[in-house]
Image 1 (spheres, rainbow, N blue to C red):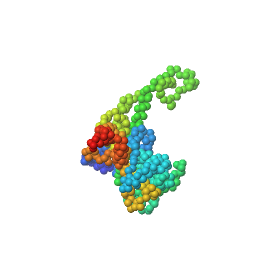
Image 2: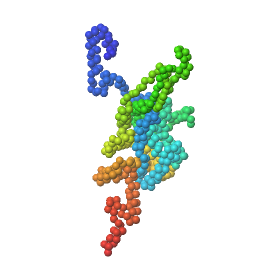
Image 3: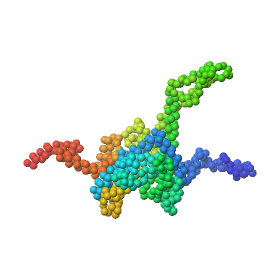
Image 4: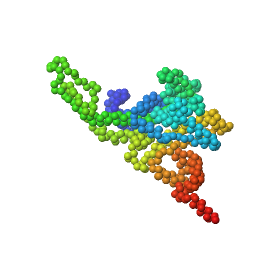
Length: 499
C-alpha cells in the first residue's frame, strides 16, 4: 500500500503511530461497502469510471466505434449474421400501409399511389432503391453506425414532388460552430434550440469525385428524419448499437483465424533436408553455391525444403484449439447474440439443439427485440414519411378534399401492416388462432394483422369467393367445414317439399 505524505511524516516522527495509521488505512481500503459494485478494493482497483453527460461520453469515441463496426461489417461473418437477422425480421418481407380515413375512395386512391410511389424511380432521389430496399438499408446503418439521416427532397423526377435522400452520419459537419440563429447552439453538426430540440442540420458538401470539400449546407429539421435510438436524456446524437459486442466479435474472428491456420499447418506434410556438407570450398573461403534463405517461406502441403548447414528445424504444434473450438465459438456467439437481444439460433442458423417448444420460445423473444426496433422505425421514420407523402398527394392533386387542412389528422390516418412470417408448425399455429378467436382472446382483425393482411380485404375476398362459388353451384362453406353437399340435389329436394 502506498503511503501519502502525511503518513510518511508521522511514521518518521513516531513509527508506532505511523504503523497504526498504515494498518488502519489498509483495513479501511479492503472493507466492504454497502454495494459490492462500488467496492474499491484490490479486485476492483482497475475499474475506473466517471459520470459524464451522454454527449460528452460519446463525442470522442463515436467515430472510432463506428469505423470499427463498419470494419467488422465488411470482414466478419458473425457480424453479418447479426445484421441480417435484423434486416430479415424488423420489417419481414415488406411493409404495407392501410389507409384508414373515413372516405373509402380516398383510401383506395392513396393506397394505389403509395404502391406506385414506392418504386425506385419515384421514391429514391438516386433512382436506385425501392422504398422497402431503402428501409432495409436504413435499418442496417442504424444498427451498425448508430443512426442514419433521411432528407426529404422535392424534385420533378417522380410521380410526386417528394423523394428521399439517405445520408450517413459522417456527413454531419462536426467543425460547424456558428448557428444560423444566434440563440441556438451547434453540437456535432446539428443545431439545437435552448430545449435541445433540433432545428437544423449542417451537412458536408463534396464534389462528384468525393475529395474537394465545399461549404457546409444547412437543412431545416422539418425536412430531415434522424433515425437513431436515444438511450439517455442527455444523448443528442447516435452511438453504434453494436458497441457492447464489438470486442467479442473481434475476439471470435481472431480465434477462428488462429484455429484455421493451426489446422492448416497440422494437415501439412513438411520435409526438411539438413545438409552435412555445405556447397562451396572448405575452410573460410567464399561460398560458391547459392545460400538458401528463409524469408517469406511458408509451410504448404507436400513441401520439401533444403536448409543451410547447421540449421535445425523445430516444429511448433499447439494443442487444444481444434478440439475446444466448437464449444468456445458457440459460447462467444451466444454472448454476442444475447447482447443484441437475439437468440443463438437466430444468428447461427443452428437448429440442431432445438425442438418446437424451444424454437417457438426463441422466436417470441426475438420478436420482442424486432418489435422494439419496429416501433422506433415506424414512429420516428415511416410515419413522418407517409404524412409527407399524403401532403404531396394533395399538392399534386391526386386527392382534393376541400377541408384537407382543417381535418389533416383524419386524412393522415393510417396503419402499417407487416407481411407474415413463415410458421414453424402451420397446423398448430392455425389451431391456436382458431381457439383464440372462438374464446375471444383475439379478434378477426388481430389475426389478419398478424398474418400481414387487411381484414376488410379478407372479408371482401371471402364474400367474392362465396358468391362466385354459389354461381357455380358449390356450397363453399360446407366444403370448408367438411360437410359438403351437392347444391343441385338440395335444390331438387326443396322443390319436392314445396310440391
